[in-house]
Every structure is written in C-alpha cells, then in structure tokens.
Length: 495
Ligand SMILES: Cc1cc2nc3c(=O)[nH]c(=O)nc-3n(C[C@H](O)[C@H](O)[C@H](O)COP(=O)(O)OP(=O)(O)OC[C@H]3O[C@@H](n4cnc5c(N)ncnc54)[C@H](O)[C@@H]3O)c2cc1C
Image 1 (cartoon, rainbow, N blue to C red):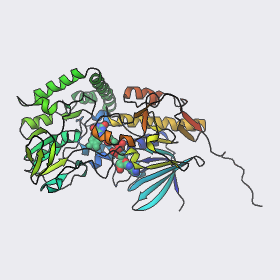
Image 2 (cartoon, helix red, strand yellow; image 1 turned 135 degrees about the vertical axis):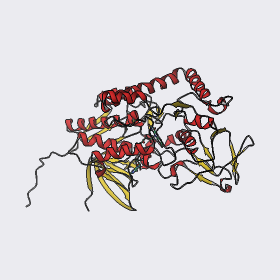
Image 3 (tube, rainbow, N blue to C red; image 1 turned 30 degrees about the horizontal axis):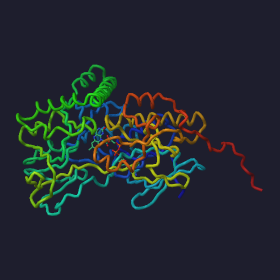
Image 4 (cartoon, rainbow, N blue to C red; image 1 turned 60 degrees about the vertical axis):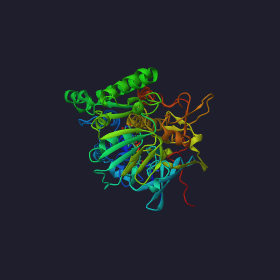
C-alpha cells in the first residue's frame, strides 16, 4: 500500500483541532488535510470529562471560537453544551469528515531531503504511516488515560468507593451518601456544589485554600448586546469586553495583590454564614493569579455551604480507615464515596516522539518560538492556550498565524521553515509559568520558553494579537528554504 499523503496533518480533534481545521480549510480550500484523533469521539476535554456539573471556568465569549459566536444565554457553560458547540462547528463545515478516529500518533520523523514528516500511527493495534508537509499539533496538555492520584496511606482499607473525576463511572450513584472531594482546584469547586443535589453531605477536603471568586453565570450585558447588535457583532464586542476585563483583573492581581485579596475575602464573607472561618478555608498562602483563580458561578459553592449541604475541611490526610479519612487534626471524616479531584498528569505534545533527519528530539532541549513552534523542528506548529485567560483565544491566534505562515511559504516558493535559536543571551524559562502542583510536577518534560522575544511566553492576548495576527512573519529567527525540485525536470527517455 502506498503511504497516504496530506498537505496539512492536524493531530487532536478537541476544541483546538476542530478550530484549526476550520481555519485551514477556509484559507486553503484546495489543500488536503486530515485530523488524527486517538479517541473514538471528538471534543477532547469536553467529551472526556463527565463528572456532575462539569462546566467551563472561563466565559464562553472567550472560550468560544472567534469565528463562531456563542449564542446561548449562559456565559459559564456546562460541558455538554460546549461539546455540542464543538460538534456543530465540525458538522457545519464538514470538518468531521476529515477526522480519523482511533488514530494515536506515536512518532513523527522529519526528512529535510523529502521536505516532509512521516507520522507513525497506532490504529486498532496496527501500525500505519502517513506523510505530510506540515504538522499541526492540537493534542492538549495532559494524559488521557488517567489523572493524578497521590499515594494515600491505607486507601486499600477503605470500604467505600474511590473515583477520579477523569474516569467518572456513568452509573455512579451517590444519592444519600457522604461524599468527600479531595482537592481545591476548579474541578473540586465545580463538583462540591453540583453533588449536593443528591448526596447527603459533601465535604471539600483541601490541604490549603484556593481563591474562589463568585461571578454571575449569565452575562446580562452580553445577552443585551447580542439582542441589540446581532449574534456576530454582539459576540465580538463582548469578547473584547471580557478580554480587557480578564487583563485588568490579572494585572491588578499582579500589581496590587493586597487589594484583590481584600476584595475576594470581603466577597466570601458576604456569601458565607455569619462567623464562618473564612481565613482558614478561603485565604490562600499565595497571591491571586499565582495559580488559576477558581470561579463559582452565582456563588454556588458558598450557597451550598450556607445551606449546610457542603462544608470545607482544611487539613492534612493521615490515612484512610474503613469508613473514612483520618486527618492530622485528629478528626475523622466519614465517607461512602471519595472523589480524588487531585489533578491532571501533564503530557507534552501528545506524548509523540519526534526526530529530525534521524536524530531524536529531546523536547526539553527545544525552545518554543512565539509559543507555537519549536526551535529545530521544521514545518511544525503546536497549540497550548493561556493559563490566565481562555485557551481558545490563543488557539485561534495560532491558527491565524499558521495560515499566514503557509501563505508566506507559498509566496516565496519555499517548502521549509524552521525557527533557529542562535541569538545570544536567551535564558531558559518554563513553558507553563504556573505555580500549581500539577504543572510543577511535569513542566521539566516540556519544551522551554525563553527570556526575550520571540522566545518569551506570551501571556497577553492583546500583545499576541499584534505579534501573531499582524507581526512580521520573516523576522530573522525563522529560516525559510526550498528543496523542491523544479516542476519541469527533464524526463530521461528510455534507451
Ligand atoms: C475539566 C476541565 C475544564 C477546563 N475548563 C477550561 C475553561 O473553562 N477555560 C479554559 O480556557 N480552559 C479550560 N480547560 C483547559 C482545556 O483543556 C482547554 O480549554 C481546551 O478544551 C483544550 O482543547 P484542546 O483541543 O487544545 O485539547 P484537548 O481538549 O485536550 O484535546 C486534545 C485531543 O487530542 C487528542 N490527542 C492527544 N494526543 C494525541 C495523539 N498522540 N494522537 C492522536 N490524538 C491525540 C486527544 O485524544 C484529544 O481528543 C479545562 C480543562 C479541563 C480538564
């Protein structure tokens, strides 16, 4: 069988992969492309996570694509609605016909001589290969086969059930049960109020507190703008409003942390019952936005605590017993069900092994160019979204940049482009600049970022719009070349 060739190969059919396909096929209707997806469904994160209440923790006007207005009333949307949005995007443009499910990319080998990648795929236990001129990774940032669960002493003695939110059993019945959710990140903050619908009581057990900000789930202004200006313009205006709001909150948190801390504390006091130990349970040791701020739509977590249906324990686990969890303070939390909302396991670039002209690539030895290409890897783009703003803001910009890059290759008659890091004085920085435990555990396995442009990690959407949508493509760091043979090569006549 001859190896199949596509012009552009996208890996991953999540929010980013479907968006990337939209950009590529709109800009280059005559180019061939395929999306390889390891799972049997599209949607990535929004198909995988099925725990009660699963939802976004950023607004859909920025988590939605730039090219497709979010038209529902809720700005903080539930997982199934987000999945529908991705599915509809794929179906409306015929993108779904380009997705090859059950295709796990295991390795990608670049050949300068052939000016193409050969991608090796595991498909139903068999190995297959494809070649492509341009490899576009949309593989997310974590392992799909399971989350992070610390080794808790005595967990095997526990008589109840232990569940990780990443592998939520569809038939899990928690009605009337005592539930303990271990963790204090976005997932725990989502799960705790959501599970109070059926559980007898839900306790959020955290080692240390996180900032939780209450925010309306419905953005009334966004909905008014949509009615007034129509879906598209209303969406665009709200998108920019929310971009600037996020930038303002982030910058204020960085420059005036005491002010933001005090605001969040006062808000929590207002929403919690009188006499509640706010500082014990909701006053983190770090400043706002050192780690991602957790969102509580309409203050649902605080409301569940007020109603007595949920509580927070800030303590350390000593070990599990048959009937619950023993804590450092001496208390024992009774539990029928324990949910380990203890995080993800990060995975760099879909776990794919790369090589260039036969030499294996060590990802930590590469440096990310503009947060979307890697030094030394030709014809290659990857997608990792912002940690301080919605993922899709960056994903859309990566796509727009990729389209510009491909046009530049065409216009110059080039067939190869590679970022070269040979300038002096670039210090290494982590690619994910975030203090959260799950990031710190694995960030050393990722490519590096640099201390100055174009290697610096862009964390501002406004700056990235200038850099990626409008900045020069041929900036001296990207090296363009052509290896293509002339189309009219003389054909040797047989004897
Ligand atoms: C529970 C949860 C809630 C979140 N909420 C928000 C939020 O509110 N706002 C926000 O900005 N971000 C949020 N995030 C981050 C979120 O992951 C991104 O918003 C976004 O969904 C990422 O989309 P993606 O397509 O880039 O990656 P993913 O959704 O992770 O999709 C990647 C796809 O690539 C496939 N894949 C990976 N490796 C390979 C391979 N080697 N071969 C073939 N296929 C492969 C996977 O199977 C998957 O389908 C959340 C994350 C989680 C886990």
